[in-house]
Image (cartoon, rainbow, N blue to C red; front, side):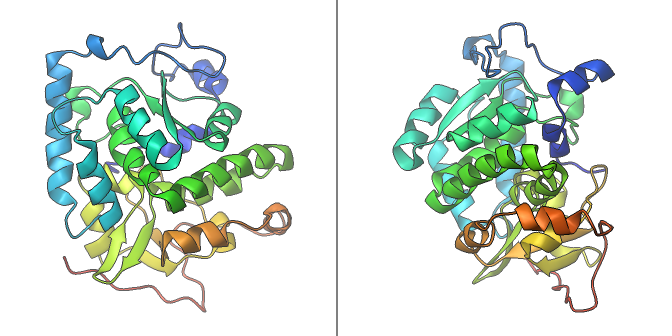
Length: 294
């Protein structure tokens, strides 16, 4: 089973999740942008202890597996001792890259999600998984959102990329391109790999918050590790109930920002005429990189 979060749920509306009865989180006090108070004082000692256990496990796995900038930013957050207070982190983040954190009850509608990103606001879920969900959780909780996503928002290039992604999401909603943009998010922000002088490293939040996939993505001989190409990524299906069968590798965050900057409108039009590629596809002109020895 996949020990990362099913971030594809970000691309389902709250209304759809409500109809299925699968929505998690208390939306009663959410405002028009689905923002709530974190209510940090309501977290229990048991929840803080669970956070510490999750944090300790993941922090031990990061060296040699996570990209250096993620590790450096995470260490600077000083979030090992319990569930962080969003406002404190938000103040530091705003000074670094002009981003802020906003507390949300859980999944939010597509347009709301993109509007937050486009305005340099990152939604962080307030609830924490239960102890029996230690290794697997379907929807993103506070640990996935904060531990997995927030550190890279301190990197100016990645922060700018995520804002542009939000703007692109708002545009995609008008062009019937959401499925393609969801694949881009999945294979980069959630499950992306990056080259470093020491070898391949993970930067995707779904990997970095996972107890198993963080090593699997680098050392298993089974998945493909393919150089990043935006159109190829947007044509590729993904798995939400297992480790990934393909990972796309960027050279740098500058490359990710540059290669996703062009207008996607003609790409969406081309992709609508093509069959989607299964998650394990390796095209004739592609070479999959080997495993990374940690």
